[in-house]
Image 1 (spheres, helix red, strand yellow):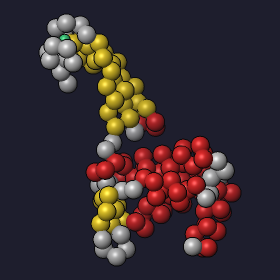
Image 2 (spheres, helix red, strand yellow):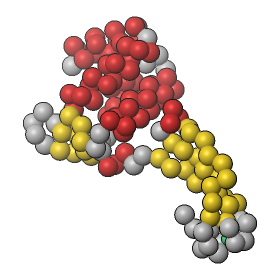
Image 3 (cartoon, protein in one colour):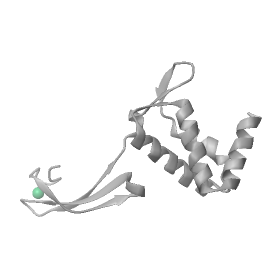
Image 4 (cartoon, rainbow, N blue to C red):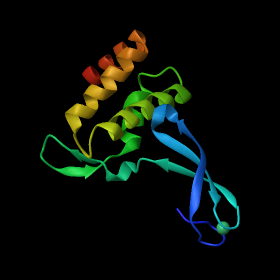
Length: 128
Ligand SMILES: [Zn+2]
């Protein structure tokens, strides 16, 4: 990456993983003017394609994942944290994911998180 001021080459002076390694924070310094700036490297979730049971394909819809988890979570903030974990797992695994595999990741994440959340999710799925 080049300097935002003079477009000269930069070097990374510090970096730190974020959100369980799904994001990387980097401090960069320009080799010419010494300007210091920060960059974030993260997954582009829109690159993930979902293969549905019908054979149709669509972009990963992170809102759908959040909604399905919202019923199992105790609070909205808990649902967001759980949804983030699911999405990060999906991003690491593949570029094309079957909708049934997404369901498995959701179930495993909830089961690891709490038995009560897992039970709430299952009863919601049965009601649907
Ligand atoms: Zn510079």
